[in-house]
Image (tube, rainbow, N blue to C red; front, side, top):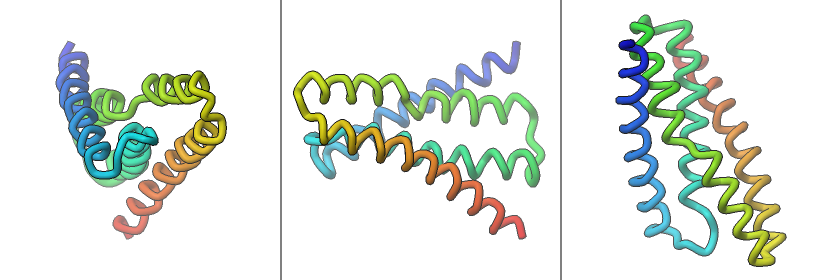
Length: 126
């Protein structure tokens, strides 16, 4: 039961953080491209890659804390459903080049982010 509560707490903090980061990103760079969703997905992937290594190989934490961070916080901080909705809306608006760029940057940016987090953790643990 405590794992579920930890995930719920992490999830609520992640959702609020996603809203804050996404909103600030849109204020900073504008809303003509889904920059906010891109920012949370790529940054969340970077942190996920980093924590996956650090928490499995370097830092001993209770399982509840690991679940709160990885499943709860990062699971709700990143958002595949908003990514899909942004892409669908761009398609419906006829912005096919924009949606193609968005999908490529989102997928490869997130993969690059998780890889950079992974490598960063490996470098710091040397």
